[in-house]
Length: 503
RNA sequence: GGCGCAUUCGUCUAGAGGCCCAGGACACAGCCCUCUCAAGGCUGAGACACGAGUUCGAAUCUCGUAUGCGCUACCA
Image (cartoon, rainbow, N blue to C red):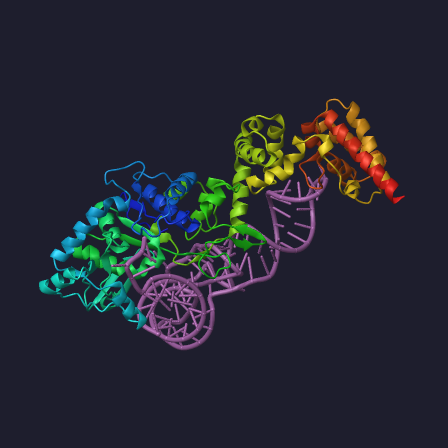
């Protein structure tokens, strides 16, 4: 771990509200938050909605819901305000014009009247903007105005020399100034471009560390130049590696990607409803481009805060290992208390079974089943398939494939005999509880000379209708003596029918 | 095309000249445990993109090549 300054940092997450929050964006926000907490500074949420065409009204709510789900509370932001409000750029438009005009007044920017069509002509020839209006006379300007042309404000970038920006992860990055061709700062609709807005706001909001995607590396020198033009100190730049598609090649797509036959969405909202735990997602994402130490990757938020440092972030692009996410989610499920898991499971199971979540939360069956499924699921969504049999009547357990009722190395007749013998035990056993049941069935295994595994299979299928289910004796107990006997009777009947049909 | 960034097991990563014929994790395979399925334990297979340097010594430094990705908008 390389130690850097621990003075309080002001770090902002500045998404543009164009769609649902992406896992890549969440990771950026997570690193922002970790660094702010690590230094005892502030985490700020700022909305960069200067592109009216791409604005998506659902986006803001989704964004805030997603961040809060992960536990990333911000100290200043659009909904809670703060000393530098407003935190939505479209509400700050007057500010940007003012600063752009200051640059013009100081000879560091200029009005440009080039039309869309003229720019298109240049583009068609593969040429960048030719700085044609960099030195307009007042008379020329008046003439263009008279034509009704609207101006944008462009930065008068240095024509020679180089600019070096320091990136906290990669070190110095140097580019020729000549490659920076007077970018637009203020658009003709009066709103700023990203370049102007980010520099003005980062300065005004006293941002000390800029964490953003590496797609911004090429424009970092421009931002550096803008800070210099305004005579403001520049923040520390930290360009985060991109998140790739799980295949390892190409940026993660906006559509679902398939891994091992299962679909994984790039959107956070799908994980909020897909059986994932926020703590697991937090831990998982913290390992993407950063590592706690060489041997350990399961850690708490508090532990991460203590160790996190932007200088330790890897510069390498990463593909999200979704199977590892699932494994980690399972680890977190197993770490929960029974009460916590029941709370978490109730809404999922209730929705799947058409029950009331509030009532189900206090249902004896769910409460007893929770510890039995705890080490068998990786996602909260997987619980229903393991427990649904407990919430239906015996009549609803059918045996479409009665051969499943036959134990390994047993005949149908032998399996039937096993069920009947077991039913006699269940009828009279006291107490009707797992330890006593287990002892009795093991004794039965002895006397009938049938392996425990083979002996129990008919009961498991009889009771749950499935070959894969939670432990048998506990399951019987959840059902109760009468219901257990009813299901065994039904299963016996199914076996008899099978024997009659094949005889 | 130009400019920039990156490159350790299939994947996520440790590694800041000798501790590394490269460590951990997921996934995978085998074994153990076991009432099914899991969980757990043990074992195994599996990587420094390539080529030149620098150095007594390079995964670690330099240069080149290759590959991938990004930017090249009045989008962010």
